[in-house]
Length: 66
Image (tube, rainbow, N blue to C red):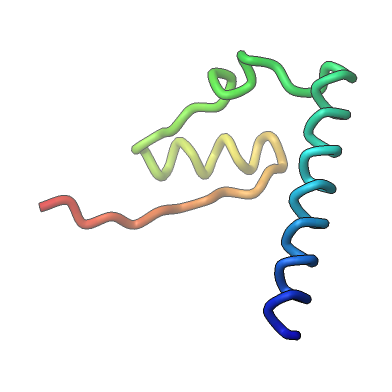
């Protein structure tokens, strides 16, 4: 019973997600260039200043690269 309920929910969620994606593509909201408009910066101070200037949140990822 629980498994069939889960599968039904997963199927409905997948269909809803597909529907939203197709609707956004038809309206032209998503473009192939949207990923290139965003960029990563390794300079924390510069990124912080840009985020404050644009009044946008800043996502910081701390990585340990061996």
